[in-house]
Image (cartoon, rainbow, N blue to C red; front, top):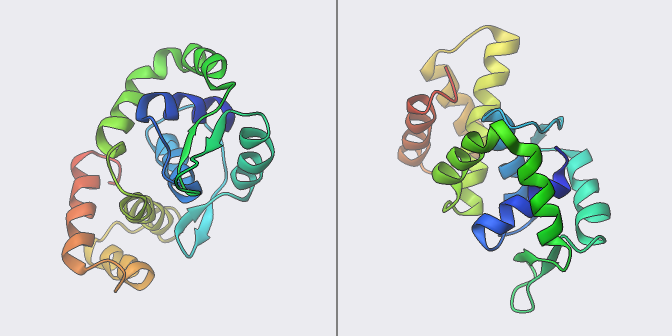
Length: 172
């Protein structure tokens, strides 16, 4: 599934997407949930970031009228003139993954862009530590997350989000 179709499905369900950062994090967390999205991410100031996705967002999603900028807020994206047709294609492609999409929205659909940043960063750091350093020690993970996100996010907030990610089995 490409970002264009995912954007159409997402804005169809949420009514709006609160910025490019939020969209990046939804795609990342969608991949974590097993949705058929395939973007490479690197760590950025605002958490996991995909250059390829950023390019597609500018070139494909906006130019093809899947999303449009809200007249009231330049950071809010609303359904564009071609969103409905792309939504139908997107949900068709989601097929067996519809439950995963719904779960993603249940967990993260009402989160702020900042919260999406924190959750995706927690996953990215935990996954990186596990893959490259073969560690899933909570204290080590929390220290690395704090290096990336403290003081923007308080330690209690980091711990709360970390524990939710564990509870949801999005990190081991």
